[in-house]
Image 1 (cartoon, rainbow, N blue to C red):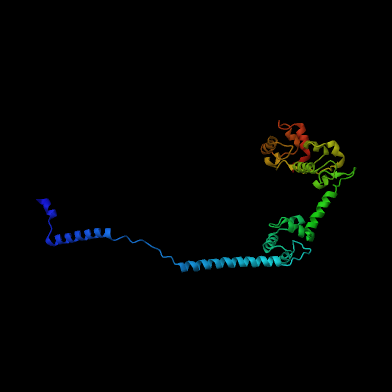
Image 2 (cartoon, rainbow, N blue to C red):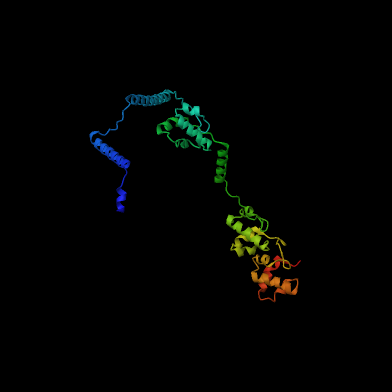
Amino acid sequence: MRWKRFFYFTRSERQGIILLIVLIVLVGVSSFFIPPREASFVKDETFEKEYAAFKNSLQQQKRERQATSNKRFQQRTVILRPFDPNTTDSIGFLELGLPPWMAKNILHYRAKGGKFRKPEDFKKIYGLTEQQYATLLPYLSIAESVEDEVQLYVKQAKDTLLPVKHPIGTLVSLNQADTTELKKIPGVGSAIARMIVGYRKQLGGFYKVDQLAEIRLNVDSLRSWFTVGPGETRPINLNKASVELLKRHPYLNFYQAKTIVEHRKKKGALTNLQQLKFYEEFTPDDLKRIAPYVCFK
């Protein structure tokens, strides 16, 4: 049959198969009689001893260096004398008994712009003990710099000098005085002085003292201090000013400014304010109030 062909071998093939089977059997049988080889690590005792000795020698050298450093620091002669922490160098701090790292920190603090202004500031040094501070405090001497002296003088001046006020009867120009001059008037402070100057700029100058009432100031208490001269206002040319410029004035609103410009376009240049009295946007009081602030050429 055809399937028997798969099991047909030549003589040499049969011999090879038999030899292979014998080898497999021998390997299997031998595994039962030969014990497995255990892994073993041989410790090198000589190397371990040398390594331990080397490690101990490094630690001993470190301890000896630390002991030598501490001994030198303890044996160092302390020289207590007056010192300024703002100018003393590292040697000076070491002579005062401070450790090197603390002296380095002080110099680093000064290099960054730090400054000791009073003895209590020196107490804030990192690592400085209460005993060290108490020992050095009698020798602390901080000199005042020029900057400190100037600041002290200014502070004393502010504390002792009183604002100068004008005596009764003094007259001040309402249109010329600046805020400093206005503050010399009794009852006028910084806020009121700024209000007067600001409103004066918007108007283009005052033409009478009573206008101060428009910014809610007590005219009765201020009238005797001010004087207003003729022609001190700054007029606006109604034939050239734009709507934007006109409406900035406190006495003109947007609709009035637009009416003036429209009148110029339709009827030509204005020659007097009476030409505006026919417009409902203007009342007689409006025209009277704006009169000192307008011109036509």
